[in-house]
Length: 472
Image 1 (cartoon, rainbow, N blue to C red):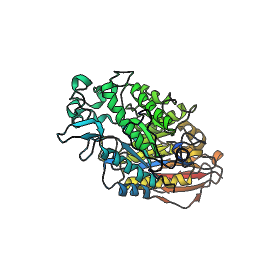
Image 2: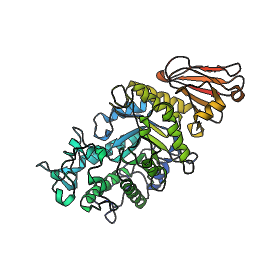
Image 3: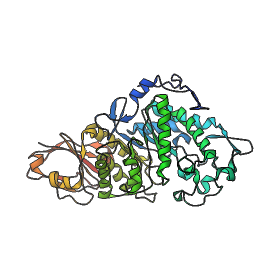
Image 4: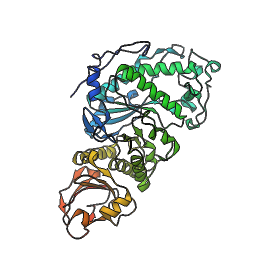
């Protein structure tokens, strides 16, 4: 295992680039960049890490894991389940969380001084993930910290700090509407919008320290926001900010934005899809609000849209739990598998109550997904549109019944709810070999040979199954 000793990589603080930052990092920049998470050279729809392709699979109990207790045990459970991917919002709105700035004895924050505990927690998370080869997707700004009751404890709220007032900052002390309303001009501070240097100064101050803390680590991705509806200039500004700091330090980084729109073909998403010079990967988590064939088709549309400039397509949030409002547990599992078989570079079960988290069902599905990705090289496969499946490979395919990823020699057929389809003999030959993965129980079955014209491919039982079918 390549351990990175954070004390051995010296970040030079020059021209105030990381004013107030700490010295920290990996062996040397060249080694860090060689091993870091980046688009896979042979198929940039996927990631590579330490020079080898890697499929990112995950689930976790919370979004801002750096603020949680029993972190090592939780990451160990993820790794034991076959997982290697977490989401980490830089959020502090929950009880027991700490904020990035120093709080005085009178309860007011001083935005000129950092809270060392906040960044120590981040380093702790990054150290633990690095040791376990777990990839971390940061979200730099979470809109839910900046509206309604959550805004009341935020150090950027004028009444909560000693550094500015409502009059000098242009920020109000109350934003009672849902953060999706974009009422808070916090997200318009940048030069192309309000050019609010009173606020932007402290946003940059926090970002400088964050990047000084995280740049040493080769296993970090940077997403600008959590399901944002802000003006596209906001995310573009921070993406460039991150990349400019990285360029100065000579480190390779990957950035994206997560939009709020559930329609991947909508205008918001074009701000990522159309701009590889701004965003080096795509996060389409909001597609995981969709179900069935539409869910699959949307992902295939994005892959096709990106074919001239392919990039990894991440899903850091996979919704669906019996305790949530965005589909039940079965929906969540199906979305996970359709994304995986459909060519996503990463898939993570969303935290409870809107997702499976890292509960027993999530653990079983992550384990099965790792078994599948170990047996079928997804980087060499091609997810097929429904018309290609029906016309070329399968017959009698019902709604949400079968999804295909076609490899050079073997084809993966995911059947989310049991059932049967027919294989086209003119393609598969007279004696195709089939091996079934029992997804819910993480178990491979013995290979069988099917015979006859257009033989029936029937799941061995109810529930979710995946077949590897090798033509004769």
